[in-house]
Length: 366
Image (cartoon, rainbow, N blue to C red; front, side, top):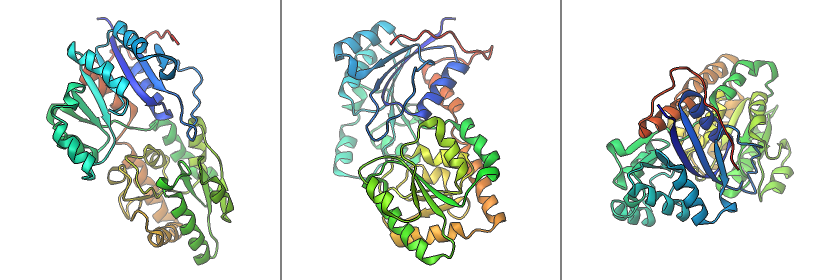
């Protein structure tokens, strides 16, 4: 039986994206084509060769007509589009959908009831269904949005995002050897990530405890100078995917106080590493991966006082309580893995899992 051909029209690639593609190649008979945006300036992921992908095309190097021709000649069995924000991708997807090729679109935005979302809810059955067969959502908040766009039942799937689980899970078993008394923030240094709120809460935290923990910050962005001015904060700069598990292993509690976070794969990365998690109620992954009092704290978004209380509480945990929360994070992290991602995608393509357990030949075309 010939290999299934999977075309993926993606935005910025990340470490977790590559983990999913690796699982797809390893566990299934597939030939993979990926078009992708260049890395964002404040998230400069470096991958070298994307050697798991058979055909890789950076979108900024090609015109729409060139990309359209490339994808059509590839003749995919299924197309995955990262969302509806790229009009070029939608134009390509519409042509393929007309030929009967299933088009799967990612959806990581939560339903917030904004005017724009309500308008889309009215237009969804007419507008979006010209381009898309199925929405692949990250979690329940996103599923509610998809349903309001008239995508439900067989046209709605879960589990769009997952971290490179096995890589981070190794840190869970090693953390006692290298763990420091430190909080960890990983994300862009921009207001929407709540980094300014974290810095203020951390200053208040230091005033309240006798032996304050450090705060490691890993990222880049416009608030870099503010990060570096606060005593006790260590700016690690932008961390590449291969180095992030080691940073997780060094830390004790993860913090993500975003004002808006559609999902937050980094929450699962921290949970798989065995870190208790403090995240805001604006994080889409929170309801799935953080249970207040079980493996961390859910903090009210934008509430500096509440975040300060959580920092104090988490740094005051005894050994047994910390170990229980650490185990809780690890267990919750198992819900989303690259193998599940690959199986879900192939079920939408009508593909079967490999019986030999081997990956197919790859021939990178750039």
